[in-house]
Length: 137
Image (cartoon, rainbow, N blue to C red):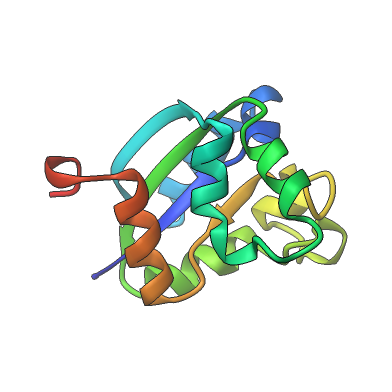
């Protein structure tokens, strides 16, 4: 079993798509280990996305991620990281495969409904950033 971190982003939460996305997550065989609805502060978004601080989209990304509530998730499944990324689809919903979350729920590269860890090291950092102690049994 492997764990990964996922976010249902503010655009999807605001559009009342979180329930549909959660349903698809469970239908795909993931177990939700931890889940929390949270409105990130700008500082939390900046800390989380610090790896992108030098990129031109950093300010708009952190503005967006702190613009409304999001659903934070710890997911578990065999090969969870790879499977979650496949379920999400390409970052750009216009280039995502049919049936993926970003194709079905995303609007643009920035407003693409979901986030997911891309490697075991990233998952460990991201899970630890938002979930601590007894939250992850």
